[in-house]
Image 1 (tube, one colour):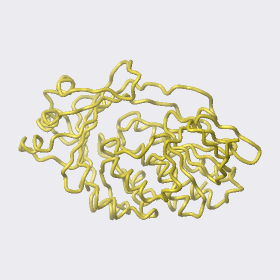
Image 2: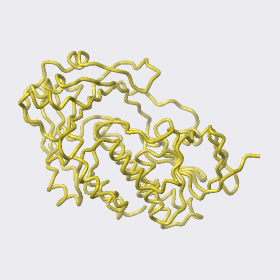
Image 3: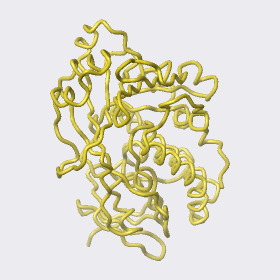
Image 4: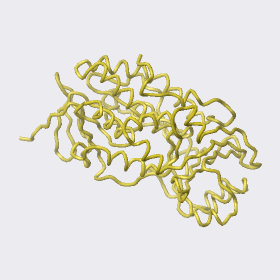
Length: 380
């Protein structure tokens, strides 16, 4: 007979949002086990932005100073015309962000951030090679079955398992995410070739060259030794079964050639580049049910144009932890309601703006986003 392990809280998914939720819940005194389908940790992804709104959460976890040491600190977010180089907006960050928003703004390699998060967790509470295959809600718990044969009974289950969340399917039924009509190219560029251009590259910039497309480029390490770009451009269909495909410098040249010299220099420094589809879901009308609750891309996936997708998942983790701490584990229904009421409007606003791809294209005050403190914001 298969043994059934008993846990208080089971977290499905050990990505950026799941790892943050695990750290915060453990710090708040909850018993939490995290189950991740990947066989082991690997340094996946490329560049990512972490705004002051989320650095405040890493302060609580105890990772703020470490991440400040690893990541790059852009002085501004620039938006520029991709042909003329004219500045469309120039939003101060750097020391201004620390003073006005209460924490640093950093850009960092996603894998470096994730490694720090995973290393900060008790290793006996993070379980790799656990792909969830079945969920059965029972009177006093939820029975989880994994592909490796493991069975776990949990009082509460948190779905941090991404846009293809199995927990989301349990709550709302099977529905594939919708292709957005946009793709992104991602690349870490050859720094020697980039420096050989003789141009001075700003740490964080979003270049625009026509209404339909852009390229965002920035350093991912404090010593500026690694530089990354991601694009956004329309493509009618995505006919591939894989999550991404290889692209090429020639494809980049066809899409962006003839733009500003800095854009051209990025293309020239490209050696390996991949192309990813952007997937969407409409805002969900249900974030929790019974003992199950969702966070991050499982309930509000978004295109990456605000650089806030991971940040919203980590904000979710902070607010959910605070709601459970206030209500207690037994009163989870009240906690889930407070969590959703507090998060829905903000997450939907970010999702909507990000999908529209208008963020900071023109001058605006980003304080509503960056000055927000998930650790002290009122719970609804």
